[in-house]
Image 1 (cartoon, helix red, strand yellow):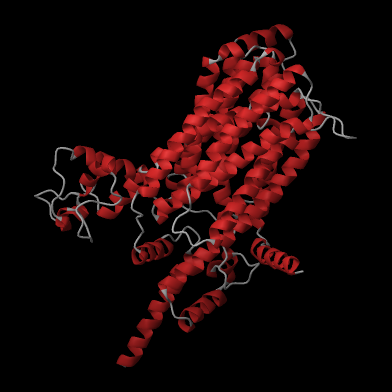
Image 2 (cartoon, one colour):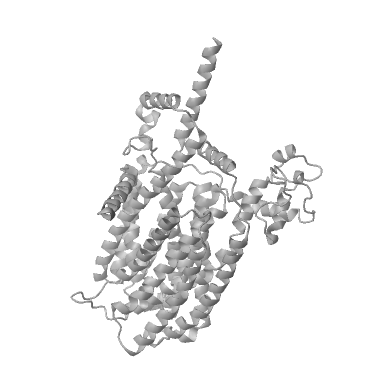
Length: 603
């Protein structure tokens, strides 16, 4: 009874956060749903379609290159949207590229003249690869930029009406009433920077819940339609995918009058290369012997945190030269950086050793996204009265397991009082990558001698989801403890970039062990390939344990609470175009109120 009541209470609390109507979000959801169709009907099982045209080896290489490029493009597209063009324009560009790539594949599949088709296919690998490159650029704009743009439409302060959008309370749209109310609120409520920051932190959590709600509903629609698409062939899937995304894109364009657009602003990642450049230009200088030699150094230490030996050279970017005073340093652009910025860069670069452990980790993920689905196509797909078990069921197992695992880890993290998230999650994730390869090898050995059923392949997809849920959630949580507040939102992009490198590593492994991959799947020796993968995954697990222990033994660099609060409030109030205009209005209201009080007392 108590458990039922507690579960009902949690659901009610979640529903109050998630239930939010937005006209803009409805139009965006149409585009998301169409992308969901393409993801589960085409992209997730792309190797099963390309094998007939390119052969097993070339198809696996093409798919891994496609996914690797998509991961590498994510951070590029993210920077373009945040700092240069804005999210809306980048979504337009990437979706146009996505439709173009689908159209190229669709046109290629409709070559009716056998001679022309043979000629295209011979020379044709280039056509397929170009289409996949264009598709990868389009996909990169979906995974992060489209999600961020959807979140921009869902801002609403917690003290406003729960189903009233922020732009509907804009004085320019609703008249002077809302302006008067906001001024009254600023007068009757003491403006406390810490309170403002806490309010918006809670709002960010609510926005994340709303965004996941809209995204999940649209994605489920895509899964349902993708399940029905198994009754059509390769040409039909390409035709449905192209038309679906074009229709979703048209629906997205219809919502332009309702969109809240965030103007591009300088990215905190922009000064990373500048800090490195300045540090290299000062490599001839000696390390500081006095704290006063460092620009805006508020501590008595001559070494900037974190104290990592191989990153000490970055401290030179904050050294004030003999002819330069600290006051002049503020105007001497790109010649010296304050201690806080150098500290942020050192924190970010210190993540590189841990990111490197994800190269081999993503090698297993790339194998699962290719050869695992080929095993599904060669299994006995009858399950009781269900004949022709759709392959999309196996596509769902992996993200579903990953999501459940990640949520469980988050629940435990919220209930614990640990100063930083444990690295054990990443270790366990790497350990399960070894188990996954072992299980997949054993299943393939059995498949070569006998026909396998649905239940034989389920464990390896479950293990991949478990591996991803543990490792990726652990990496994100650890990243948030290492970097400054302004860089925390870039964690998924950096993680995606590191896994993208690992997907290219899969291409190298396929070329090295090319003699095990024949043009026909039945004559290939995937069992030996899976067994060989156990060697690098085991070595990577040992390396991950070593790196994790190294991080654990580093002095924990806590960010000064007052400084973090000040920086957070500054970001909230300064960034007028990011959905925080309310904080700006409240602060101005408080200032005007204070001015009026002073004027009244003077009179």
